Image (tube, rainbow, N blue to C red; front, side, top):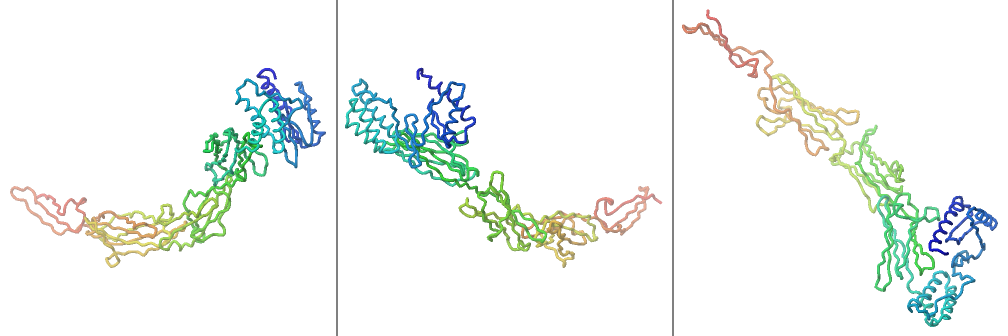
Amino acid sequence: MGAKFAPSVANAFMAQWEEEAVYKNPPCELGLFKRFIDDILIIWNGSRETLEQFLSELNNNDRNIKLIWHIDMKKVEFLDLEISIEDDRLTTKTHFKEVSRNSYLPITSCHHKPWLYNIPKGQLVRIKRNCMKDADFVTQANLIGQRFVKKGYEEEQIKREIERIQNFPWKPEVCDIPVPNLFYGNTATLKCKVSNVFPKVLSVKWLKKKKDSEQKLPLSQNDGYNISDLTPEKQKDNTFTYKACIKFKPSIADEGEEFICRVEHPYLKEPVEKSTGPLTIEAKPTVSGPIKLSFTDSEEVLCSLDIEKFYPRNIQIKWNDKETSDCGKISQNDDRTYTINSEYKLPGSFFSLPDPVVRVSWKHDSMEDWESREMSVLDKEFPWKPEVCDIPVPNLFYGNTATLKCEVSNVFPKVLSVKWLKKKKDSEQKFPLSQNDGYNISDLTPEKQKDNTFTYKACIQFKPSIADEGEEFICRVEHPYLKEPVEKSTGPLTIEGASKQPEMCNCSVYEGGPWVAKGLCRLAFVGFRPASPPYKSMVMQKQLEAG
């Protein structure tokens, strides 16, 4: 074509033309349009008349491009191929032009002899690659062989070369693609192994076929796929093995689609494709929160749990090892995974049992075995744990009846034990108190709250004595949902003075002497406490004027 750059310029010129004339608004009958520089192959899914009309419209251009075409229903020539339809399938063989002549280098050429003998080998390999039928290869190989014999090549060597290529021992073997379990969001690797490769000239492409479609789309790194480079591994028999790998993160949108590995090699008549078949994508259920407990209007306990991000939709759920017919309300997320809110009702009396445990189990296709989550009354997420308030201590007066109260709220179930204890001053020993010791201890009466929990008020009445000074009253609360008893203390008690005025028990008057100018009166009081103001001592003195 003249200058070295001429094919590139011609190719660019034709590409711009076909972009505007063909691809911008392609007719619906156009099944295939392939071009190599100025040679074009078209497959038309319409009548001959509509094809000729389309070609005439292509010729109507201002670029001085004129197409000359040959239309046939059975056979066409394209480049060095003769393409024909036999039994509703395409078949190919090498096309020799009418002007083809025996222009091969003679054996007497001054070229290096191994180079010369590689010429018939290369031509025979081309014939082998182009011919899909063995019969066509034998016919065309013998034709080419005779041309080389006429150029002085040894006939026996040409025959041996034809036989070797016809029965070529090294044809790439493409293995099936093993498909691992594919989990949504988890990186997966697909591998296609190609063995018995020689020479090490291999081309591999990864394609993707959409669900309910026959179109195959090429995949690339830019599409979010990690496609590894091809690295040949030499084997003991001097052939090579390749492992084509592609990594990706499956999404639910990949469900039902196919990944295809297309392998091309000079010794393959046509590309070999291996498919994964329609993919099955699974998403393993996740549980992020604890079991939630709440009351119903009928005073039952409603247990609920959210199981999220699973696919496909079917899932099995058990509550306390009892499989439920109605698993719960299932909703679909934006990423096409599913979330279920499973609920189960338990009688309130269930939590009065020793060590009650609520257990929910689930099983999904993506799981090998059942998984579960439990809620125990000792778990920190358990909503109903008794809350024991501090004991408010009133002013305590000697001999006056006093009441101490300890309030316990958020109780469920209504199983509560309360004991009153007393700790002596300067001692760590605690003594239980009872009605027989002169204390009035009220019965525990639960008060139901709006949230269906209960509140208790533990009360003890007593008359403080001076002996109670510095001692402590302790309220000990026990409940099945408390790991250990909770104790609240009043702290050391302070007993205030008596409720009556101090009584005078003695009064003495002394007259002044010669050295005393005034008289002295001494008063004694009893029955009051403490010794601090308003009285500074048990005995008060007052000076009186003499006389």
